[in-house]
Length: 247
Image (tube, rainbow, N blue to C red; front, side, top):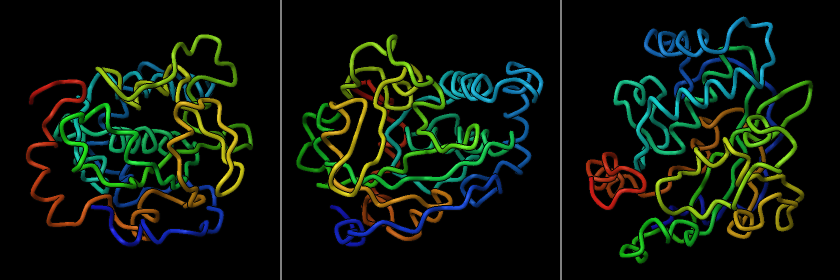
């Protein structure tokens, strides 16, 4: 079930340039997206405030406004996700990236090839249908002249209050977990890595390097399921609430 381009991914891409430009996925210039971002601006306050405070406000707003589901459409635009009012962790991360770029905070995507076993707790009865490898677009943001993972951008360097490691089970999603400082990742080579959360890190099989956007990452390696399969399962999984046993 894993597309060939992901299976054959073996080398890192060139380092991405920092950018705040809108893309087809990160369409923060779309009227629907701008309308949503204004609600974040009202909570976060003036642009002169700490950008991390803005990112935390954006994360809370996205968490509360967009229902978590198991959608497989990784290249869906942010405006499309907002219209539906529901999205996967990947789609909700895209909304966070769009919010950051609209605020002048550069973002990029690190491609992480994850072992499909990471998702077994979510689908105990469907393990045989889970792809062996899953491509994850892991957001990185540029704060104070330094690229940091989405977890550090939200929670800061300290993890004393992070609580238990993210187990990818129950109502908490990966998007939720990064808000409390869990599931952090720091790359230190293709096979080796230095990670703050060993429970998350042990499922990372390959680091594909950084890309200027998730558009570029998915254009290069493709999405996680073959197109016909993705179209067939999206009507069900695109409405199936994360942590629920039924739609």
